[in-house]
Image 1 (cartoon, protein in one colour):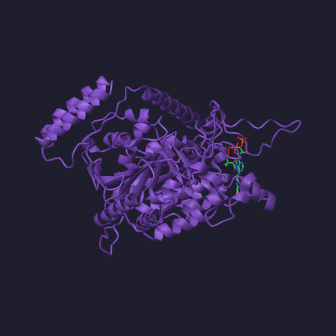
Image 2 (tube, rainbow, N blue to C red; image 1 turned 180 degrees about the horizontal axis):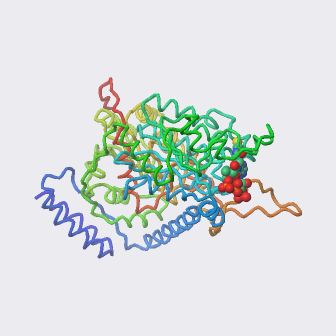
Image 3 (cartoon, rainbow, N blue to C red; image 1 turned 180 degrees about the vertical axis):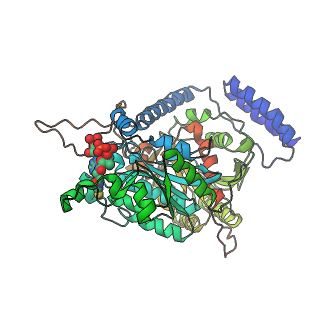
Length: 578
Ligand code: COA
């Protein structure tokens, strides 16, 4: 009984090393069931030797939990949007639904969501902009994964800051990579005027999202808009350039220049409804297609539109739960780097049934490669725990070739400090790393990256950092990022210098530093060191900072999304082994 003996070894070691009765009880009941169900289960159960009773793990737990609490506090403030006064104005005066209420009415009941870049806009030069002014989620609507972008009308009237554009473009990029229908819930006063000069200067800004809408539509990726608030100036193009647009009576308005501008320019007095209401645009101008009496009707209509896209529903896969409780990862996240065994514990916490088929386990010393399943879907894993040696790089390239040939998505787990000079002075290292980077860049399978503790210098290339286009890129709260290759040059600060979150609405970016008679600029929610994961998330360089215990949940969903409608591209060369 190979499977049973593998389980015994695993649990013996876990029980020896962990003081976690509850986990063991749960795991043992899973074990019995799993053994009976999985006589033919694929891949061996990972053997992990980690002593979590050691004092160093207590320190790690404290550090890990501290950073998670800090993240939770920040998220609680950001989820409040523009603050109490703005929410009241939005709901009571303007009679509109709050952004999350809109999303919950649109998506399938109980649908899991990827909350994309929720930390966007934190601690920017122009203030803290909750959620970057726009909520972006990926969730199922009528069984199809959709990318939903929704302006938050409570954050400065839903206007676009530069970071809002960056976030919207990231959502479009993911939508383009995986052919996710896009649904845009528009409630925006257009560009945030004090920063208008920063909204249009380059190709990746300003009008780019409108350009992308047309290009995506041409490529067969559906574009749907719901006008559930103001669509002023640039905002007016979002529904008008969509494939189909729904507009809500009374609360939806759409025009390039509103009534005040008309009065100033022409001296004509006209109401918002007459100038650009739902009756005008659905019945006369044709800018929108479907008239909705209220928001509920608009979201019901939108769900019907998604049903009519002629796309298959996403399948649900049955999967074996891991044998390790997810909160072990909170402890590991307190360490500044994970050893090979600790990294295996991460894999055991994340992969179905804690099963993993290691590939070339005795070749290379600092990178683990292999195959596992996540949510019932195959995934190729690359995880490092030190410098990428020449052999490690060759092994990584080989695994990527195999995954590319077999259409298996890749998961990169980043976990290393910057290299030392000795570690990379051999030109062989450069040659082999270049090979790993080349093969990765040219591969056509989706990849998902998670920075567990650190990603530095050319690890961003070999370990699938930002510029190597992971479909999703997440980080643990204490993970570090830098462009520095060599450790001698990089004394990284340990903790984010955190100020306690401040409740209330975001600061007005128009506020200048204190002058006599002017209000003082509100203090930032938090000061972010430039190598921290929070800093990277706030600039939308990564898609989010996740609680370590949510790693499996997040990856399972991300993998389901990238596996749903992504086209498989033809490959025209053999696997080149080494
Ligand atoms: N730029 C900067 N700030 C803006 C803004 C813009 N385009 N539009 C609105 N705001 C700010 C308001 O100054 C206000 O700030 P405050 O909370 O610090 O007082 C906040 O957003 C909410 O605006 P308010 O008008 O009080 O809320 P509302 O819900 O009644 O109306 C709008 C929201 C967007 C419909 C309305 O503000 C509007 O029409 N704005 C002008 C839109 C425009 O002309 N855009 C052209 C940009 S290219």
